[in-house]
Length: 168
Image (cartoon, rainbow, N blue to C red; front, side, top):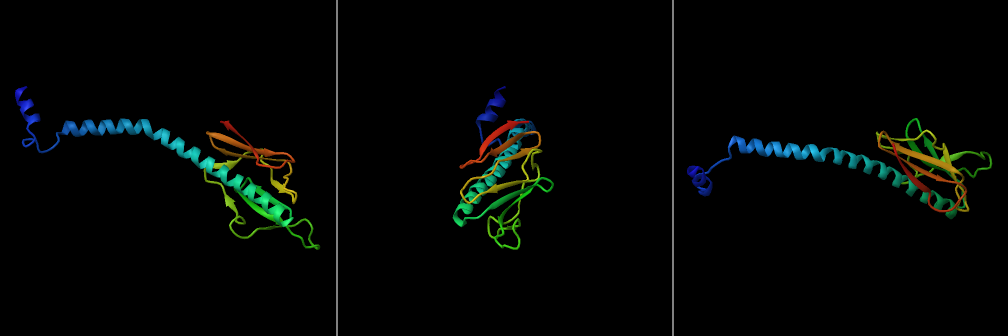
């Protein structure tokens, strides 16, 4: 026992870690990683869903603002098969009354939901924004498999969509 105390107290004699010390550190790190990893993956998954919802809400706000500024009808079209959505403006050409044209620029591109995020079953195919700033009745569900669903809905109103979260 006294030789052990001498060995520990004299740093010049000690040059490397023993195999047991290295194994002990590896075991402690693996226990810590096992406890932390599931929380990190769940946090990342929730962040991906929240980011998708925020992008959609920003597009709603932009569509409403642009409809008022340009005195035009806009439509947000959701494609549940491809998990994409796009913002379109009504064609004002008298020859073609009910045609919508995809916008150009930053907000005119076709947005795609991340791989593990999709539109829910009861999602409206299209959301219409009127020149007075109102949006017709709609319901958009964005869900992440096995984690949660976020529902955005509104009916003939002005303002931000009503948002509710449901745990799956």
